[in-house]
Image 1 (cartoon, rainbow, N blue to C red):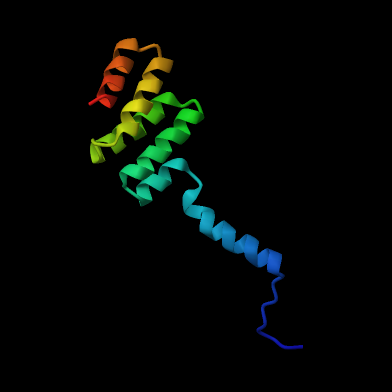
Image 2 (cartoon, rainbow, N blue to C red):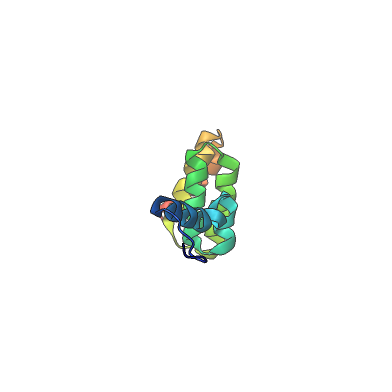
Length: 100
């Protein structure tokens, strides 16, 4: 028998590799720590909104808005969140930004 050979079944290798690859992505905030782009903040805001975490969604969308103040999707999503939180005046203000 040969020594020094490390036999690992293929399914164990795949599981091991995917676990190492997924390590940085386990928490939602680590994505934005790795990629400080407006797009990543948009996606994180949308994910938080769909999970019902509206305050966290607003925080991510506002971070994205600071990096990219031209994109209309921020105003739409912030308006939807404000409407869900019963903030009519704020929702109208965000939705007016869409028509500019």
